[in-house]
View 1 (tube, rainbow, N blue to C red):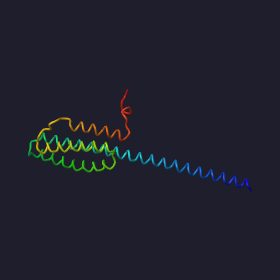
View 2 (cartoon, one colour):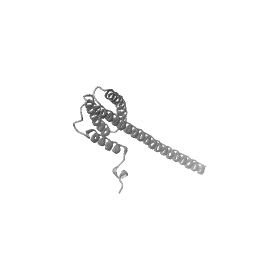
View 3 (cartoon, helix red, strand yellow):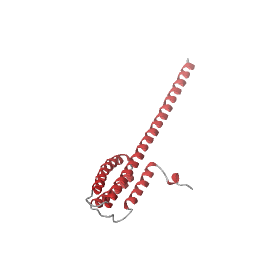
View 4 (cartoon, rainbow, N blue to C red):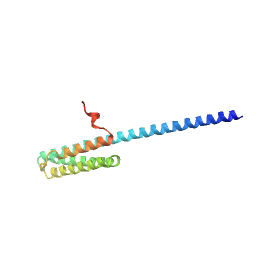
Length: 157
């Protein structure tokens, strides 16, 4: 009888150990899958936001090159405004997904875009070339850090 109890306790301990180890492994697997899913979502949001910023910047540049009051100027301004609406919506997604340093860098990019839009509406050249590009570079660096992409991963020896 005692041997049967010992055997039963051994089987019970084995079953519980197996259950807990499988449960822990599944939880870890689920956490990794969720982290990967959110990282993919973040990456897509970061890319879409930057692409939209460039579209707005290009439209504002073309508006400054077009003759004020012309149809081309009006089309560029309309394109710039449509891009601004998309950029604003993408920024909201970015705020929800991104790390604080990326959000801060994106705020700076927004300020640069708004400056370019204002100059385009006034049909004036930008006072400093590359200001938006510097802000975008800071945004890209922050996004890479947030995604865990270190410099060694993309530099060649």
